[in-house]
Image (tube, rainbow, N blue to C red; front, side, top):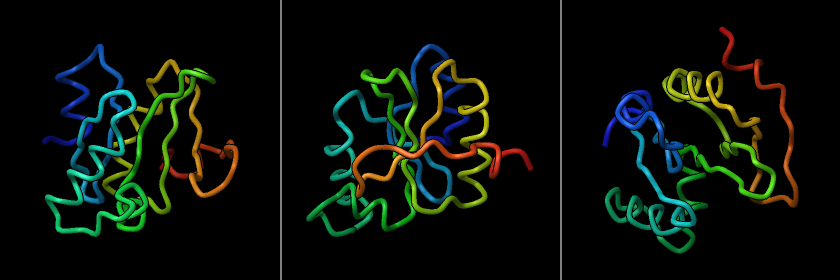
Length: 120
């Protein structure tokens, strides 16, 4: 476990797919393994595991993934902490992939104005 920025420095050729905790710790999840990683995180932190991805969402975690269909980066969150904003800024600024914020509870994706929160 490390911060997202540290993980990205250590793995410059990998896409940081996984979960970012409210305090900025990154948990890597390989392609199509987010549900399993979410269940492990719920075990480690004693969270409810009925729907582990929803539980992490409710606890302020950020879900980071890459879509092979639209060739974009998807960042799923309800609210970002200041440390999450700091950790996500280099990822969004340096990614060759377009950025999308998703809402898993809704069909489709929103295209937000990304610079609202990370150009402080």
